[in-house]
Length: 252
Image 1 (cartoon, rainbow, N blue to C red):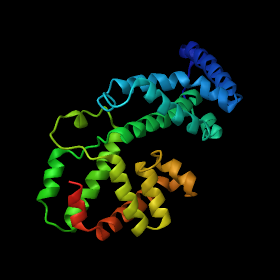
Image 2: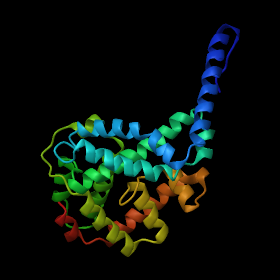
Image 3: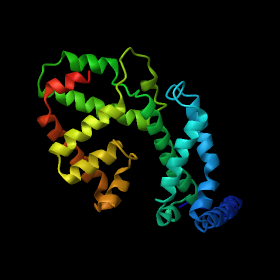
């Protein structure tokens, strides 16, 4: 909570006024119907779609209208999942709501692009390192760690300069890779391990945070980060131990 004194009373007054305006606005949004909310945030979809349209990801792959359509699919699904209690408990409910919707809209647009062109890369130096490793469990471990790291980078860190460095590695198709991973996971993981890895990396769904996964799977939210990280590690260790190294080479 911000602290105020006599000298900055004016700032306190301004903050209070802004807070009242924000609260009135979020109450107005909460009273809207599902369809009204979708219409209200359609400009957000168009804004995000236009940013994608000028990126290397979408260039020559999808038109702006196609990107907007995918974004609208994401918006519609997201509106059905709004947790107003969580929104209202945040310091800035309006920004929390917009961030929630933006994340889902961008996820839907990315999946639309993925269906037309898979362009997730394992950095070239990592590929070379994996290829030079012995045909054993160590190589499989490097493969899985690199794949999951590249998925994280793709979905969370588009502007990280590390991933803007040009290299000559061939992109792998994320749709095919996800299908391969999901098949292995169904074969070797428990249901809870399967769901946590699937949701953590957005393999065929929205990529969720640890807290979001915890709520969905009825895991204690207060220990979500530690527990989910532990289960992810256990699951990946199981995949490494049960994957044929020759299969890995097929993806490199």
